[in-house]
Image 1 (cartoon, one colour):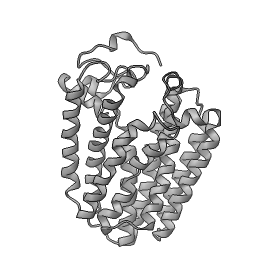
Image 2: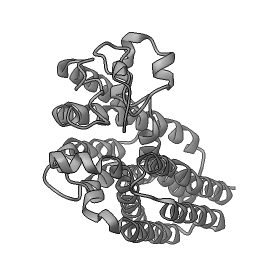
Image 3: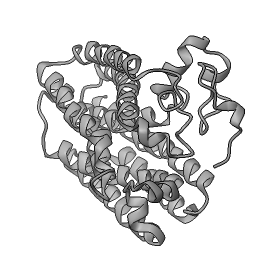
Image 4: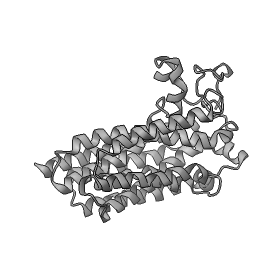
Length: 318
């Protein structure tokens, strides 16, 4: 991916190569820009993808409980928590990957490898974000608080997985799908089989969409020895996506059946499945720009499923 060298300065105004022309570049106060880029507020798609399993589980659990009185507040708190904690996770990832990012064309202009902020400044910012996330988490019951804290172990080890395994996307799936457990922890104070099956389905979804994303960096990753499912699957990526997206739809469907979901939820799942099939049909792993667009489109896929679950919950509570 080519970009202009004049955008690669070391000051706060320097832009990130794969995210330009956004509100951070044009509207945010200059001193905040490196920090907003560290937390990816200039490209919030990852926060949306982290949020989707949270909203799925909150809506499904509310439907199972036949009670949506607390659902609006839960949805709002999950929204805030997802954006803050994704920012914290990205900051941690950038701290651990700063030397590797300097060797990859798409990432060498990020705040740490380009010198816009120091590792110490990034660490302080990470702690601040984590504290905000803790405040959000403390609004829930004790079991939900402990469940949320437990996810930090996975978040902490994820950046190192690409160095030792061809399957870092599995670990990302474990982290990004944790919200599928949180809705049940918040609503019921425990995690049941339905939650675990939804979690497994979300993990399979994450493996699929992050494989698409990783194809943007496959050539650079090969040069510096970074492993990914994109490199592992290579020309067989379409077949792998059929498998992982298919398993995702099947497992989420099992979760809906286990939770006695009604027709709106199933309609949402059908729309979700159709969107995933469209992604597979459109994918060209040699087109980095298309890979990025398809990856981002998974927010829409997730929202389609959430809409069905939300209507289902409202119907069951009526």
